[in-house]
Length: 279
Image (cartoon, helix red, strand yellow):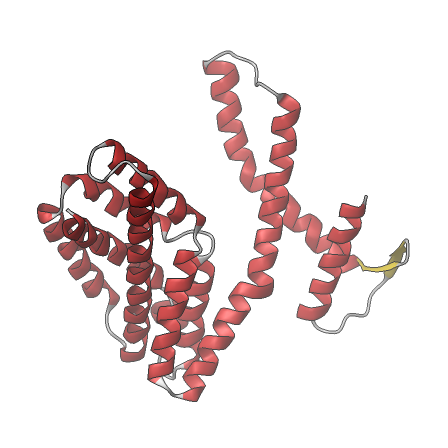
């Protein structure tokens, strides 16, 4: 029950902070003044998350029950886990709307008004580097790559060597994303065409693939995917849209998007170079 109270009050505060002054009915739950609009928003988000999750549940259930013809193990545990997933998605979406998108857009607009390109580029690099270092997916992939490299004899099979390899890979990817966001911001400022830059980048990936060690190529390609995860995408997208909205002559729809493409492209190139250096 305390969880229910927390959810209701949390959403009530969110609506009060982000919406126009409200004038509608309210009701009391054990001393808490609850905003009906907040409850409706919570239920709508919860149902939306449940709807998005249903196709996955349907696919798993079909193959488990119809194709494999085996019952689902630990049914209660699975159902409880699904509820937690739906709640997590709900709060994640609320968090994006409350914090990450607004702060990213507002800071981008503030830097544009300040008129300092140097500070803007520094902010773009730090944002790309910091969000990538914090990506759980990148940490997991780096650790797995270090483990496989040790088993394959590429590095010494001890904890210090594996940690060094994993951290090197992790910081290489973070560095590449920082440079990628800087490049994307510079494109917005200068109005460069994104398609030619992306085509040139993938030509570079193909060329590096011919010279990089085979053992690093798969890791490099996967590194481009793990950088576009839950933390990086919202902040970087908000930065691009906010910056394009604040600069005269830029269209947020045409110029604001595309930073994620650079954040996926450059890590592949940087990791292949890292593999050649380590080898």
